[in-house]
Image (cartoon, rainbow, N blue to C red; front, top):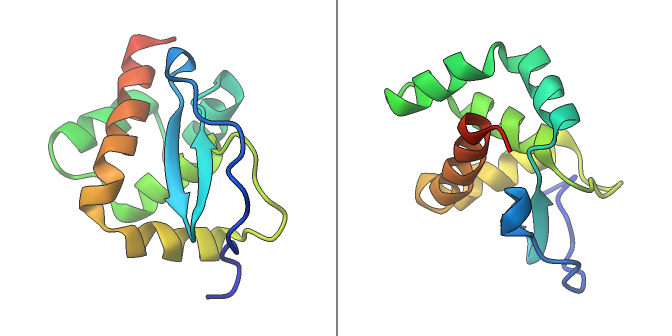
Amino acid sequence: MSGVLAPEPLKEAANPARGEAELRIAGEILVLRPSFAALVAAEGELGPLFALVERAAEGRLGLSEMVGLFWHCLRARPERLTRDGFAEAVTARGLAANTPVLKTLLGQILAGR
């Protein structure tokens, strides 16, 4: 897959105290952090975050919305990682693998940490 990561050594792990979550893509752990800047960027693309949480609770959150939230919350975005490659890799992981990560981020949005 073009734009997808090649395996690299494990970097700094996610810090649950900061509301971070880990996402394994192509053998590499990417850390998602729902910082203020990340959530503002996500909201600019996806609309109000409370509405996003409501759609998720109702089972109406679209795959593109989940990928968009994940993309904006990446703590560090490797240069070789493209948005399309990231979207393909997240999709390939499947809903079951992505749900815990999504749950963590949505929980942080609601908690306001």
